Amino acid sequence: MLKNSDYRDLKIALQIFYVAAAYLTTTALLGLNPWIGQDIILSILSFEAERTYSVLVGYSLIVNAIFWGGRPSKAHQWLVVICWPIVTAILYFALKTNLDLSIFSPNKKGLLMLASSGMAIPALISFILRFANIHGKSQDAAFETRFNYLLGLSLVFMGVPLSGLQLTISLHPFTYDLFAMHWDAALGLNITRPLMFFGASIPGFIDLAQLCYSFTPLGFLAVAILHLRKRPEHTASAMLVWVLLTSCAMIAYNFFPITGPSYIFRYPQFFADVLANPQSIPLQMTNSAVAPRNGMPSMHFGWMLAATILWWLSDTKWWSRAVLVGMTIMTAIATLCTGEHYLVDLIVATPFVLAAIAASTITISWKTPARYLTVVTGFSTWFIWTLILKHLVAWTQSHVWFGYLVLTLTAVVVIFQAKWIISFRSAPKLDLDAISAPLEENKLSSEEKRLERKVA
Image (tube, rainbow, N blue to C red; front, side):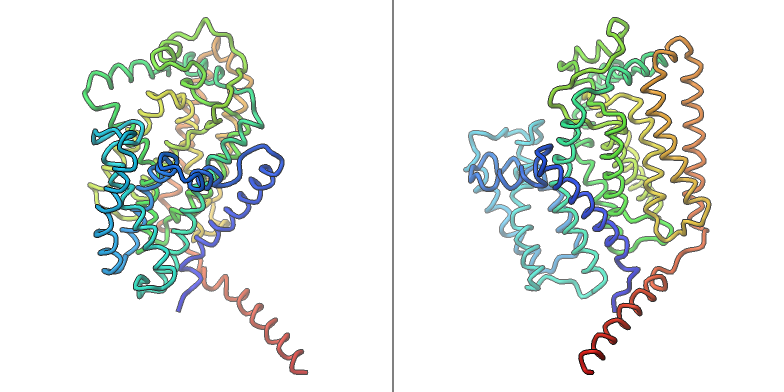
């Protein structure tokens, strides 16, 4: 029999998604942003191979990871394996003139992504068959329920980021990019240019960093698939953290909207030179045209950091932890070298992420000091940073000690947050089934009363 504790975290994640979807639907009605999933639906309905493939290739790795991590039946495994080369060949001949025949390609048109897309189509068919209960469901009812929530949330959540980011463009035509840039420069944190030269000196280093950046969703998905099987009581649910963290970030982008230096200064070498010596550029808000407001904080780095922390807390093997830590470091490097973010974005993302993880750990009571302190200090630190960067950058340029003081205090907050999250392992755990029992009893009694009235 299914217990409430088996999927309560995913129900909460779905409720948060409903709220976000209702908000974005309302703003779409006002013409402020596209509809959720609009780009995906229009690309498919265009019946143009190139447009449809551009959507498929962006999500194929996620679809494949969910398929193979979801305990597919032998029949479904054979279905995908047999159809994979056939579908890949069809895609190849349909897109032959638009493909890059190298293994990896920066525009996602290489052979690796072609093969991934060829597998994703039969995997999607498998999901439909599994939902229809055709030789696909797991015998474990709790696993199957969690898998259905994971699959549904992952598929519908794909259409949210573009809609949410487009909304930030409509609401904030001007951004605080130059404030973040001058803050980094004042404290000597403008390390993007040296990083780019260092990466260029090692063959394949930048490409590897960009690959890790592109694979960020897979990091979270790996933890979510791990939690399908077993999630330690003291660990937050990966899917709940993903939904809550993303929702909080979309709200945060409205307080201190920035786009990243590559969107302000355009050319890679040019933005790196500007970041290294920004004194000639005045401290003012800037019009960033149609670039998405994707900071502060940085969510690609935040997602990868959260995935690594959750993976570490889930009692995994040391070598897999090392892989996730390496991917987090490479993602941080990629966010800077591609000009997507400033270093201060990554700094502020750390307490923000830890706060979201604590807020998502529903097995720990809110009365436990370690939980509410982690949440309050993390989000408060982010909010104080937004105020400082909005109003005190110019003052900090002539009082550099203040900037180093803020960095030191932020580091202290992160250390305490990490200590509090580690203490969750020994903290008293909530009985989620007992909490939901009174609600179920009230529902049952109301059903009985209604039945009695009908009989009477």
